[in-house]
Length: 359
Image 1: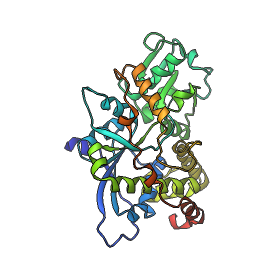
Image 2: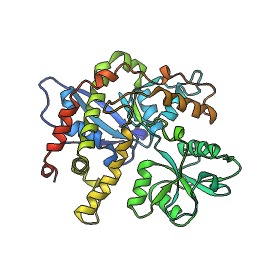
Image 3: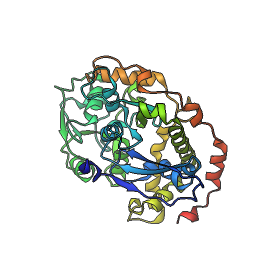
Image 4: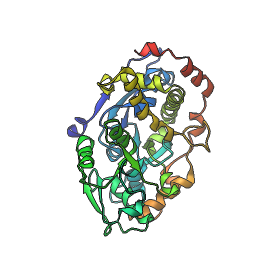
């Protein structure tokens, strides 16, 4: 266990004056090795005092990925986790070899963060054109393999015969593989692709079937025991995060600057102030996937049909042996309470916010 927690990075923020009553202290796990603008709503929830209003004192911990988040939450090392549902749902199926007693209680990302992409100047414009090509993934056991194979099958290709998957790692190692044409395409997550573009290695997403593009992704989970016994904490955290999202959508530059203030290491070191802000705004553009047009400004809501599509996706890929019911994957019992706040008030706060206070 000590080895696991050497990977954790405690995120410290400047707190607004707390309530007289002692706050509940909890750990929340985020599936990122490094802090960046993509987690700005979490940081805003704490920095702007929304968590204080709920009587919650949060320590954010960064881990290597969603699988680690799910395992650590199930083991009791954190109350809440922000995790991609694919691996967690696999562990929810009846008779799972490595069963985890988890359930999602607040939906966050409404579109699939995984894409199949090619270098921006590539002559390839459709997934079907990847026959005979090499596709880069972080590792052969990564989630990228599952999504990549699904995209290939949907395009009429046999992922085991028609392409070659190549492990290329992440970060600079992956960018080198793209530049040196070690691979013809990659299956990576959204913020990684944005990072590649900012670093001068832009990639272009290939079109995929809409039902695959709209698979639900990184959302809030907890153990079913926590959901039963500590609803107030879960509702409070979900509501604070929803406020943080509202604030960031209404004032994106503020949330870029807020991220840099809390985590100076996340601020670009090169370029003019305008260029640095532009890069931050590119990363924060990933928040567009945290909303869905059919929900308006309602937060945390689950779109059941898409979660059923996720179960079908895992079934077709052989990751589960039978469908996982929606009622097992998530609960809607907290959604209305999470939305019990004045959205317009948060938007006004964001629009009136003094950016100079963050500089």
